[in-house]
Image (cartoon, rainbow, N blue to C red; front, side, top):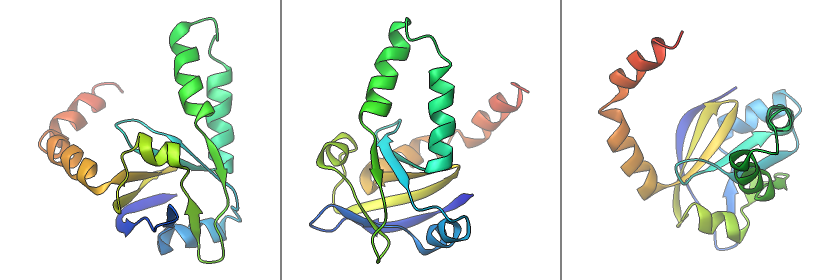
Length: 146
């Protein structure tokens, strides 16, 4: 659904413009609501409403009596914000999420199949630099899981 890597900026009002390729996908699928929350590796995850509902169902199926489930769901769902793009296809990133991901002016927006990730450019470059060296090794290990 979402693919590619785009460089953007956050404006002074904490607004981020959704890349045009993602806008096309959202329009084609009639998606108006998105959910942005704390992601992993210090980025933000943004899901279309339909994918968000799938995530909710997965976590509802986990036993809330387990401490790790409670800890994660509090961060993930408690930190979530429903957002609707404005006419210019901008979304507002709440201060607490901007702080969580250490977002500065320059950001990287990635399409990762069913979600969009928003990264501070410095954090993305560090992550990418460290993981690209192991790309083939990671692929090999993942293929062994099948």
